[in-house]
Structure formats: structure tokens, C-alpha cells
Figure: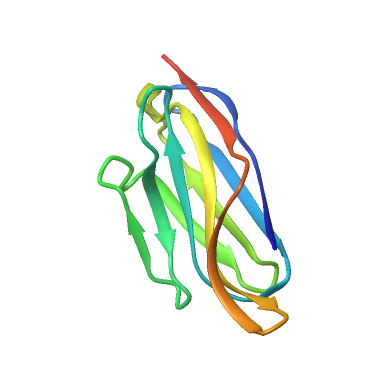
Length: 123
């Protein structure tokens, strides 16, 4: 099983910055993609940013230019640096990891979610 723990959320004024972190642990053989999603009350969960195993990145249009995703391969950690935050960025942010895990029969590919960290941007 894979455990993901997010941190770094909080309350900031519009225009402020936050840096989110997500640490993956458990029976992990290797990690492919790591990403950040967010969900506001009454809304569906949406992709914010994703980073592939080779370091390629993809961002939602709504955050492009204000957000940077990065990862530490040795520490199984993904980060999301958010700048110039807007009230519409307010949501619970979830870490997602696509990985191979160890099982009794070999390796299994799966996706896992963290518990979420709250980001609130006031105007």
C-alpha cells in the first residue's frame, strides 16, 4: 500500500504564495507520474499540474505561469510552488501518484491519493 501525506496549505491573501509538499511512502518499487489536483466545494476534482518520470510537466490553463511542479526522486516527494494566488485558487489540494508497488506476485501498477491540504486565498 502507498501512503501520501500533503502539507503546506494555509490561508493567504490574494497575490501571495504557498509551497505544497507531498511525500509518498509504503511498498513502492518505483514512481511514474506525480501530480496535484484540487477540489472546491460543490465542484469536481480537477488537474492542477503533473510531472512525469522524466521531468516533463503539464499545467492547467488556469494556473499556467503562476505554478511550478517539481519532484525529488530520491525522497519520493512532489512539490507545488504557487505564486500570485487568486481567490479562485481556493480548494483542497490533493496529491496523486502513479507507481509500481510490491505484491506477493510481483509488481502492480496503481494510482493513490493523499488526504488533501486546504488552500484558502482571501481577497
